[in-house]
Image (spheres, one colour):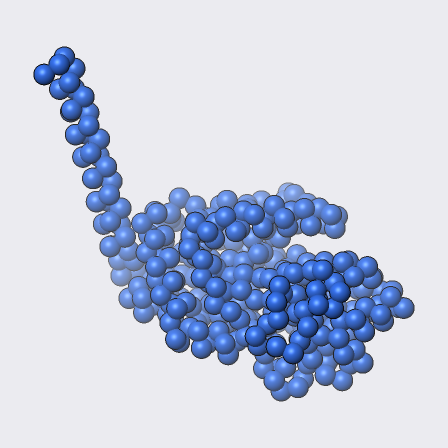
Length: 328
């Protein structure tokens, strides 16, 4: 044997043993999780909203997949900042999840919180929703073109409600009418107050997500005048997109699961697998159809790239609108 060869062999053996030990620890962590402990899923909006309802459907599926209770806890406020900050401060054992969305970027870039998407490890995207512009069924406008014509003739008189300053529906409305070149008055509400305010005649229109509107559309209470999606929403096939009506704006909203940064890759992998199976289940697909949202699973790595890409895009939009701020 050459001099030093024994040391080289020993080093290789040690490295192999170390790798095997790490693999065993990772496999054990994945197998042990959740260890009989309940999992808490933080929802950033009040009970009864579309975000809450879809989270509860997901939680039911995850409870079955992980053989433990997945409890939904509503922590609304500040455009999502309250819930995000709570989850970011929790342990990294995988027992604290956040039902995150595009709001992770809008909340940060508008100065409502000091942490951004990098405070969380992405687990999986679950679904997508396209914001819808709606009016009361007896409103004089039949489509987006007619609303824009009115806004041009009466600058600032058209009032449009949304789920709150800094929310995805807020930015969707701002971007839509800015792209159309008209001036409207934005009226931010809490998510649960938008539609009652529209039905009560306090605003002319509202920008909301499909889950909050499907039943109202079916019952004839409201009419959808535009979808801010890349293609027509299957739940509303007769509704033209904003692009089809001459306004080049797409503002799909996504929802997914994230955990505090530093969480075990093995635990994330187990959560990702449970989400993938839940999203593919007939029960979840049917529930999404009833809520007018689209299942859209993406694994952790792809989800992380999507969030990072969109964060830079939203930062530019928010800056262009003069709304970019830093948290105090």
